Structures are given as structure tokens and as C-alpha cells.
Image (cartoon, rainbow, N blue to C red):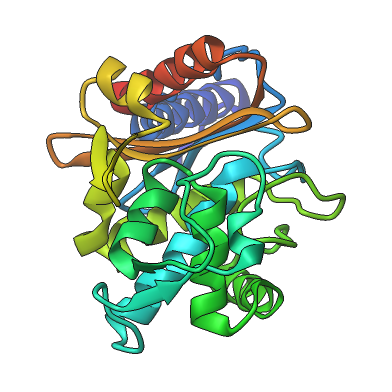
Amino acid sequence: MTLIPTRFSGLCALFTALFLSAQLWAATPMIPAPPTLAAKSWLLMDAKTGYIITEYNADQRLAPASLTKMMTAYIVERELDEGRIAMSDMVPISVNAWKTEGSRTFVREGTQVSVEDLLRGVIIQSGNDASVALAEFVAGSEGAFVEIMNQQAQLLGMKDTNFQNAHGLTSSQHLSTPKDMAILARRLIYDFPEYYNLFGRISVNVIGRTLYNTNRKFLSLYSGSDGIKTGFTSAAGFNLAASAKKGNKRIIGVVFGSSSVSLRNKRMTELLDIGFSN
């Protein structure tokens, strides 16, 4: 029997290890280093698979502002899909809805407005009053609707989210994360595709008034962008959940806590570019 010298045997083992390492390296996808963004937290997701491409503080609980309305819309769309309400149903506008502060669709107390017009007001113009009106119509009160929102969040796997209202105005325990909002954005896109087009409309006519999408700057700025929602309060900063599609690839980005609309849009552009470059 021929004995292999110890030194030669060691070299063979070294070359084998290097060969296997090279194969493993070649099979590993090259993901660009995450950018340094002027935001408190952010996340980039492959929409088809739910795979998180890159993130920063994506589990940090922060004020979501009007990204809240993504859940309000999700529940209304679920009710429509399951036949419990219809787009043509007329919703009475309460004093509570009419008096809601902040961004408004300007529905008037004592009037009736269709579910369709109110849903457009929530999604496109980010109407706080329209959000409350729909919440009261679906659940009987905004408080009962908020309970449904939190139950739905848990069902969707949004484990770090707690809602306290239907619109997103600042409240101490009204919190979410970029990861949870990306989960919600993905479900809005795939669970109710027949309504998703509303998130990409630049403007719409509602009760005799032209409403403009609060996200229209980014929709016009980024090629392939087709939704979904902006948010701002002084406590939250400038938030954005955005989705864009190029070919058969869709990417979702979520940014929390930018200091301006222009910076928010610039950072989202950088994130989506990373997603499409992979």
C-alpha cells in the first residue's frame, strides 16, 4: 500500500476547501450594501415572495401617520369582497366624522356619501373624515372598527402594530413598523387587486370636488410606480409605502421618519433602484 505524504494530503484538503468555497460564493446572490438613508427606519421587500432584501431598524415601533389608512382600506375592501357592503351603499356622515381634524375629504355632517366615494377619499386624498365615516359604517363606531383593525393586523402577522384610530393622527400607543406596513402593502396588492388601482390614481372626482393623490409626486417621479400611501404628522415625520413594477418583478419599499417630502421620495428612489438591480 502506498502512503500519501502528510504534507501532500494537507494541500489536497486545502484545495478542496477552496474549490467548495468558490462554488458556494458563486451560488450566493450579490446584494448591494444598504444605503445610508436620512430616515429613522426603512425596509425593501420583494413583493412576490415577501423576501426582505434589505432593511434598517425595520422592527422599530414608530408613528405610522396616514399609513394607518392602508389598514382602514384593507378592512373596507375585505367587506366589499365578502359581500357585506357594496360600493353603492350610502353612508351617513356623523358629527364625529365631520369634525375629524387634519387631512379631509370635506364630507358634511347630515349628508350621505357612497362607500365608493369615501374609499376614494381615504386612499387618494387621505381623508381623515372619510376614514371615520367608513369605520362607523362598517363597525358601528370608530372604537369597534379599531378593534377589528388590531385583530386583522395580528392575522396578517403584523406583530408590532397597535392601532388606536382609523386615520393615523398622533396617539401615544398608535404605532407600527416598516416591516409590518410592508406586509400590509403586499396583502393589499395581492388580496384585493381589483381595488389596488385606486392607490395609483393621480386625481379623482368625489362629491363634486377634484381630489389629488397625496402620493402624486412620487407616482410621477419613479418609472413603474403604481402606489401606495403617504403619511405625515409632526410626530411621525414623512412616511411612505411605495410599490413599483418592472417586467414581472414588483418591489415594495417603506420609509419611516424622513424630514421632508423631497428627501422621502429621494430615499425611496434609492431603495427601489436597489431592489430592481438585484
